[in-house]
Length: 332
Image 1: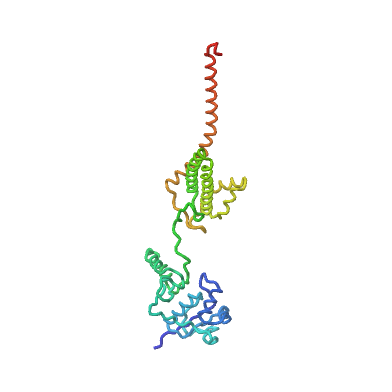
Image 2: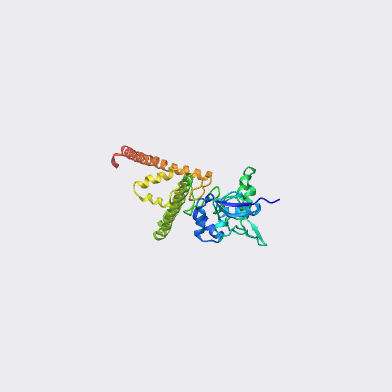
């Protein structure tokens, strides 16, 4: 009784997310062949890359070629093919089955065989982290995890670690994102700190103009720099470049642009500037509302202060007239 024999067939199709040039380069290295012979494999006609294989051996060839990006298939011997690398291209030899060294290992994601290491040299995953994520997957996602770990799945490299759910908050940087409410809250906190610093500098200036001026200059520069930083982070949350902050210096346009920064919501989920900011705290919300009250209080002050001053002037004038009315005639 003879065992079933298999052949590996390729008709020029690529694995998903693979480019033609990349696959050609991978096959050229795998077969140790020149580029012209590899180009002939992509004519569209089926080609038998390897014949007369046992099933286990055929599976190994299948895995190696699929990792290289070629969408090959395993067929039983007996069918007819128009082309065959085995007959027409003897110079190209199929890849030998890699032998594991004594201290070798196989990548749990792509099946790549290598010496024991913390990182897979083929797909780039950190093996310990990958196994921890797979262990944390719920039962419903187990089939997908098994498919991803299969050596017959599409080889996909992880570019980096998984992006966190929320970004890290840092005031003194132009990286990251902050939402509308946090932008208002941080602006209010900056205003309060600046007023305190300016008050101290003004008091020092009353004592010594030189000392007061030395204190005032870094306070002004620091306030402008921090204001730019939080403004850039607000633009990042919208998905805009931080350089657009310079539009604030353009007459008329700057006023409209500053209003847009307060009105336009941030993008949902992560964008090119990172993950979304964390939820707003109670303190941030309170500071944001207090900043919104500043212009209202300013309008009320602009109305009430002149009215109060006018009332004081009338009262003083009435008091003077009353004093003149009751003064003795000799004192007039």
